[in-house]
Length: 383
Image 1 (tube, rainbow, N blue to C red):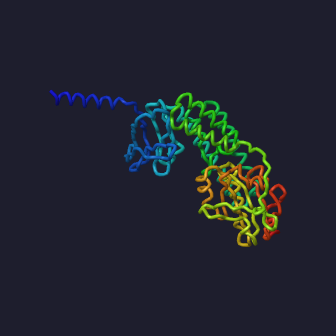
Image 2: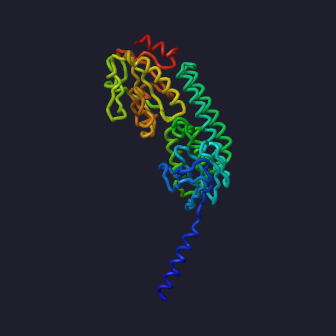
């Protein structure tokens, strides 16, 4: 009798577990016989594989997982080709794809959110191609660096305006609006909540909608943290009178700077005496940074052997992002942890970023950006 009771109890438990809400992603991937297809979760902390299958000749697959308590993001991956999708109340998604154009030519049924995510993905891919084409033109000297930077800036602004109107503000409660916030070009966020008040408004809109529907969700809390940090980082600094410490002023009248580089080594600006130095205050996590640093790299490659050096100060709040973004740059990269509230920005009267100065071989401050008509010609003359 006891054995029968235990059997019945076990069967009831199994039946209960099987009734837990699940989502199902199924479909076919043509021309992918023998290849591994992965189902991965795209969490805040990164991507994690949760299931996989080796595709056969017919390309059919089916994944079942517990449905998340709040909207979450997942992806299908074959090799380095990815399909992004979201799951909220949806139970079944049907995906049809071919291996050759897996990331762009797929069709997905069962979720309006996933259709919009595909639209955004294709738009981002097109934007990246256009930026890459401009980079190539600049590398081949078909366009000037000024034209390149201006063109990239206009492209980004146009893209953002379209996405704001059509995807974010039109439906901030949808998962595709959240997805749009974190799109990137060249590993830089298109929407920059750390440095743009306008972009923060986009994050606020989505955060407010998520709070109404999922107040305790991890993504909701994370989004609000981003908004709070962004508002703090972009607040207008109160004007203050600064007494210049005598030890910060070199004998030639140059205000010295002493900050740590990527390896934690203190780098003094005045130690570069004997070189022509471009001193710059910048933010790596911004839409202009990639284009601007490309222009600087061209100058550095041309003139570093003749005694030209760049001393670049990051005002980024995110230290990890700064380290990642500047790791491959050949010049001196340091960071001021005080960000836009830096004492050095006040000492050098920096009102915008990027702002740069030219310093002579004798450690004399010669000019700042708005007073330089042709940067390259000025550097050549100083060398």
